Length: 388
Length: 172
Image (cartoon, rainbow over all chains, first blue to last red; front, top):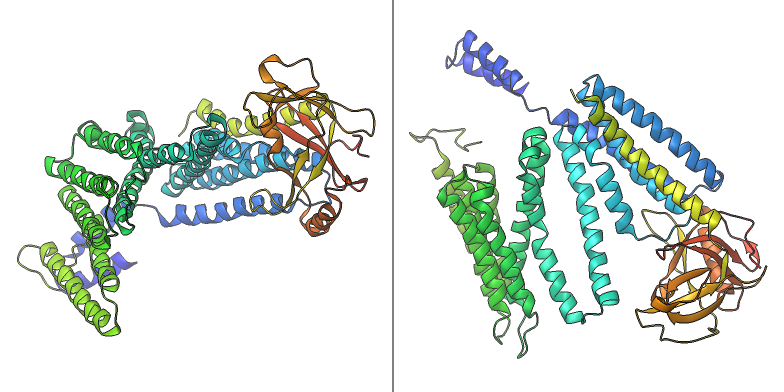
């Protein structure tokens, strides 16, 4: 509708003729990215799945346990048959909806088995089993929302599994709490790497490009979040004894993995894009490592400056890769971070107010600079926000 | 369009996992000896799995005590009691255990267990468990698999069945 209105306006203003308008409309219709409908389907089907989990959680006493199991199995089979039918008929939307419901229903069923038979197995085992068993199902659904759900299942399993590893290290292996914390730190630092590696798997890229893309996006999002958090180490003071220990060096090795693997993962990236990503990772790790290297007082300003540098390197990488929306997000984060600095640094109402005004001006200056840089050649007016 | 074999794998794998869970729980419930423990402690609530009572097994005085309960190599060798009696245990080395009805790492016996109860009965059972646990009035019938997985077959509060997979289990 929006495009039709725009085409009509451009035609009325004599910018394009009727034939061009028709060609543009046809082109856009053919290349439209169907996101809204699959997203609505995912929301509806996801609500059904969540509702089923909730009904199971209610543990309705009126139905004997084995009858519940029998009804559950019958419903699972019916859902599986309907999903298979939709997939074999090539109905994408129906396949997406049914696969999503079956995905949630499988989790509800595993919970039901645990509930009816009072099995005391740990949550991570069920979540891992569920994520693995439903992976082919969600690969069958090709939409982005389905891919996000697929990744969400694995993220849950990953989080639960790593919490269990942490518990196991302390309880069964018997390592000291200090070593266990170091090991956990390394595990958390390494968390995004399997996602990026999975996203770059050739076969996944070829057969399920949407899933591959979602996996890689989650990995890089994890890198960005962990990098930003790493800078925060400077908010607390470091005493005479190192607080972390060998985990610092080990996280350095972990940080080196994406830097070294970048040319293999993304040979199509430009040298400056790879350099910018490596720089961002380097800034985050160096800030974190230096924070534990020597006794020092708390220095929030170091955290703030390095975090801004980290976001700036990521903004540079986004610009070098032509990802304008990402570039805008990171420059926006820099603006926000500057505002936070002013709130942190100043104490009285007057100085905080002055700081906020200065921070606001700085942010507006950033917006102005960004707007100028994204203007088309010749400095066009009006729509100059450079939408990608 | 997806191939038939891919579609079959995609829809049958989740079903297979559910069926395997049911079969394994049914087998354990039917075959493992009934080990009745007194229980203590409580604490309900869980979003994913619904309402449950939380308790620990109260391990009786061991007949033999060859190792410390905190030692990772220490196991409880459990022998089912006579009808209406609680379990008998010996604390032995896991590697050198005599024949038992079930062998459970001693540390695992201290882990809280959950017993899922209907949402509308949870507060009442929670109060009941708090009142009778610790006075010998609460008992659980558990099945222990070879890998140490515990399944609570039944729970009795003051002799009354609080919900059981196998109601024939001796609770009193």
